Length: 608
Image (cartoon, rainbow, N blue to C red; front, top):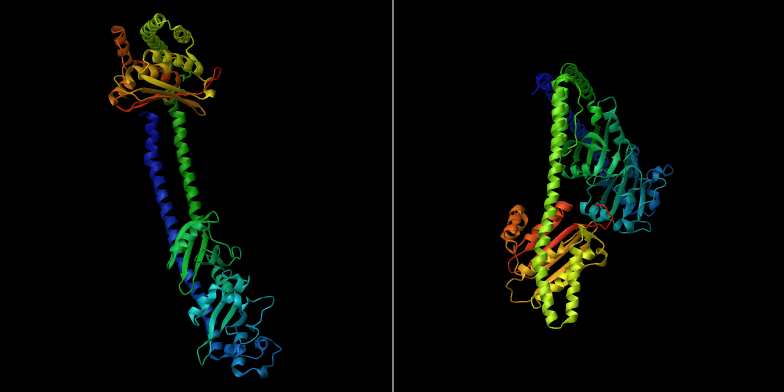
């Protein structure tokens, strides 16, 4: 470790890092304390709000209980003139009302939050099944026949007189679109306890607004938003009247489903980090939700954190300036050389350091550049040797094929000539001429059409020599024939099947040559039903030492060496096209061999 790193590390390790860790711990503890304390305060506030809401509902429950106990609603249901039952009508004759009606009317006037009240006659004694108790302009009640089919009707009947409260936006078809809370309860006859009607009473949200207004004015909760939501996350009441009737985001809905009593957590609300508290109103199917911006809660701590970060940055900047002015002269040049060495590690062999200065550092720079020049020379030499080696293997393969194959073919032609088979002699000569014409071309790559012509000529000659040994099929799409590949790619693969795959079989062999044209590559497949190869033989083809095979070829020029042709094709393809191309062999003893040749797709003149 050099001096600059030692000094900088000491400064960081003894001053900056301990100070930074202390600041982070203080910051996190403070933030956690803010979240915990505020969550407890908010949950307590939500419980107080819930208690106040329950008192509002209980107060109206007592009002309607009073009306039921005095028989006001029952008398309205059996009245001869339902329209005269509006207790708020100023034109109504006070003398025509009995004592119970007068007392209840007084009670209604003393409860200004009531917005509307009416009765459904469940038996339909009168022509009108809706009897207005407390009138409301521009409001159309849901017809009784539709209300009877509503799921809420069955729920009210099942409650058997217990009030059922409905919040705004839960059932707008029954309560309308105003922000009102509605009580629905069953009315029974006081003597027979039979069901005679359903009471619907709506109250305005004035009392709710007072609760939230008194809670937020002049307190630390003035930036807190309060919602009343149902279990599905639908906002039934928003103190700011912005999200009424809308649905809370899915992350909060999941927490709502898990809340049994109260819960606080930090999450996103409208894209802003916030502290969210939930309180379950146990007697009602609703939950109170409060949302407070985390930015508002953490303003003071954030300001402290900004000052702390600024001080840390000043300290780090001071340390860096010290290193720049006092240590960079020596260590900077070494650092540059190290960076260039990393470039070389990543494969950039052309990296060179600018030679500057007149001291020992200049010698180090020159030594690096000289070393890279020598490495490049060695790489060029290795490439040349590999190319020469590949060409030598190609010549060895060609030399392996030509002598005994040419001798055997000429011998077969001689036999045909002795037998006066002129047509067959001509065909064999043409096939041999085609093979020789393609083989002696100086081009390293030829079109697939010429390769197939060479292969077909070779197979026809071999089929004549081994007439009962095998059959063959060649099926290649016409659009593949102009694609280029290395010369003598397919013939060694087929030769391997004939000479080694069909060795000793007591059935007729079959060779299939097929091709598939893909977007950027060509798949050539040579398949036979011969004796197959073992795992050891497959390994020897892919991992054998080519130098040893060349020595064997020189020592035993006429010896049949199994797999030499396959290895030669394997190495040539990998060297020419890269590691993702080449031969892929699948074989099992007794089940034949499949050789797939993968080469890039391009035609004459294309770049690969």
